[in-house]
Length: 164
Image (cartoon, rainbow, N blue to C red; front, side, top):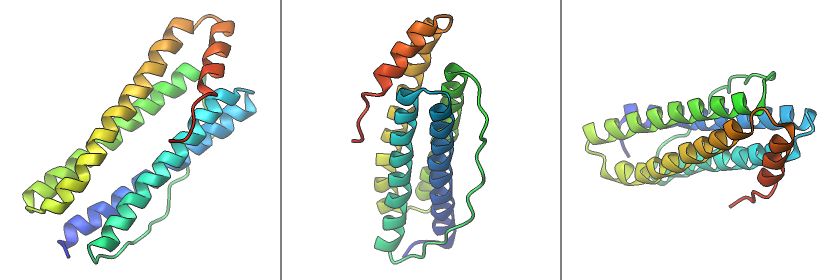
């Protein structure tokens, strides 16, 4: 078993991952309402990924003989703007998650908890991918910003994303 402070921090991270899932599901609902099925598809898959991240932490706590303590999930926003602005919000959110995971890693270093450091390495690598994906979509949307046809093409492109 590991320290109480690390256990609490990982439980807090579970909450953050579930909030991320909830945020992306809210964005998916918004996109559905705007008839952007591809953007919605991307967000639904992102929702699944974030739920998976929460479950990795959930399993890790149990694997270490610790307790999972679920907390209330904050309500995400329900109103959004244009796709470009939404993906900028996604990138900022992912940067916040990256910062949170980095702080968890720093705590594991401080407490010399090597198994947690090893587990967190996967999340650190995952966050690099998350930020890269959001940045790539932002760059594409910036090129298409004033062209409804181009935005529709990006929407169609994102409809091809499959859960992985």
